[in-house]
Image (spheres, rainbow, N blue to C red):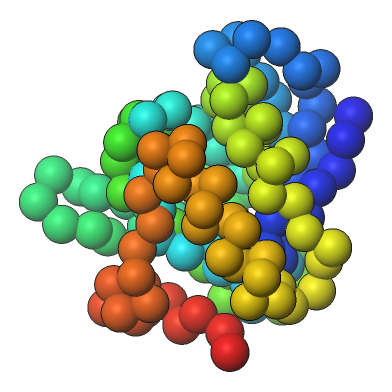
Amino acid sequence: METVNVLGPTVEILTPPGDDDAPCAMRGAIPAGGIVPLHSHPEPETFIVISGDVEGLVHTGYDLRWIPLGAGDVLHVPGDARHAWRNRSARPAVSLVVTVQRIARFFREVATAGGPPSEEEVRHFLEVADRFGYWNATPEENAAVGLALGR
């Protein structure tokens, strides 16, 4: 098992490395007050909340909507669907994430030292995301859905 920090949230990769399309299980933790900005990628993800309370932003056909989730709740995000996360609670929100190895490889490439990300770490994250074909919202698009990016 390997744990990486991804611009604040942490991801514990539970499945040994394999082919990009092979199944992968991870344990993700969003710290109290933390967010995962609006983004999309071709790979589907299924989230099973283990502990804490979190809100997932998902596309519901015509718009984006925040859905509150707690322990035992499951949220499936299809490939290419725009989505985001925010933890407004005072404790970490932890989920089991089932996806494919390509996302784990991405997380390994963008791993940061922890703490508030530096401008260089954010730039590196966006460059790698672009290379993988992942879409990331602008600060303005994040603000429009209620996510304030730090700085």
